[in-house]
Amino acid sequence: MTDNDLITAVRESFTGVRSATGVDRIENRGRALRTRRRAAGLAGAVAVGAAAAVAVTALGPAGHQPSHQSGIQLAAWTVVRQADGTIEVTLRQLRDPAGLQRTLRADGLPATVTFSGQMPRSCQRFQTNLAQINRIFSSRQAGGYPVMIIDPAALPAGAGVALNPPDQWPITRVAFGLVQASPQCTGS
Image 1 (cartoon, rainbow, N blue to C red):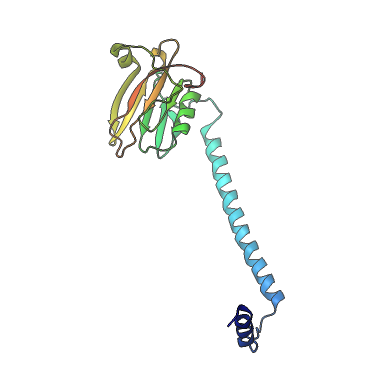
Image 2: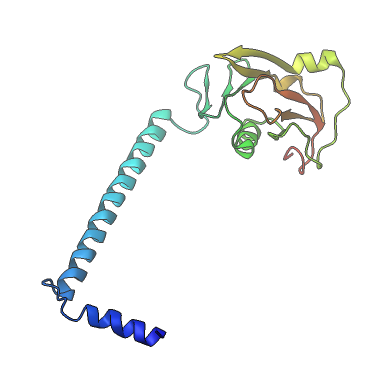
């Protein structure tokens, strides 16, 4: 049997089959369903946008610090600038190192963040001593997660912060240190 013979046999087996519903009605029903789904999706997007607008309005004007603790809170990590100028970083998951890096830089901290335990090639270590490191960094645990407290005022001129937690779960420790500040490494 050739392909043509097979096609002919299949076509002949459906000769007596007829649809009670016309093609126009089937097409119109499909369009109506797609329109309804799009409208539901659009309504959901509008609701999310409205909730975001309310949340932004509730936070107050940009740059305003309503209390001693403000910051960006995410499931993976949290950055909070304290009233004394220190910055607390809590790591819950090793996600979005670039987002954490942007947030720290937005808070005025020259920083590089990787979640691999290795320093980026664009960064050079900053020569320091343990006493200076202890003035800049301290740490604690909160809810089983590491919290790094960074004092930007204690950073020496020309230095930036490097955060390099090892790529492991659960997060038990975070490697941190100083790097030479540069646009390629710390953004400044």
